[in-house]
Length: 101
Image (cartoon, rainbow, N blue to C red):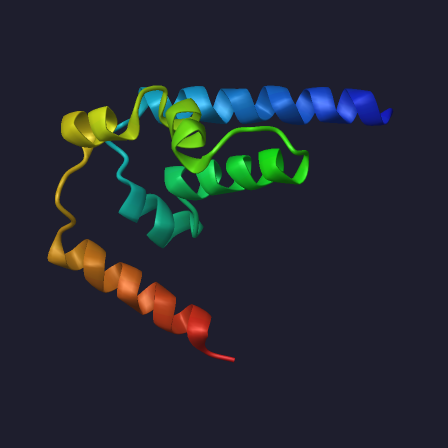
């Protein structure tokens, strides 16, 4: 595959992922972390890091707005729920597994 086509397809898939996550705010970040080992904030960190590598002026908060489709504080007020004890336990168990050699 030609590299430019590859980049174009990856970008289209990433945009689709962002739209999907923006359309499903009921899926909490902690659930994503437990199930997939990444969340919206991780995507924003990766986006900001990619921008920095290319000397593009996009900081973490700007990247979060791109990922969330709105300022993070607004998304948090509208959609973020307090993590349940079960979610926290699952997250802690996942982190312990990752820490094992």
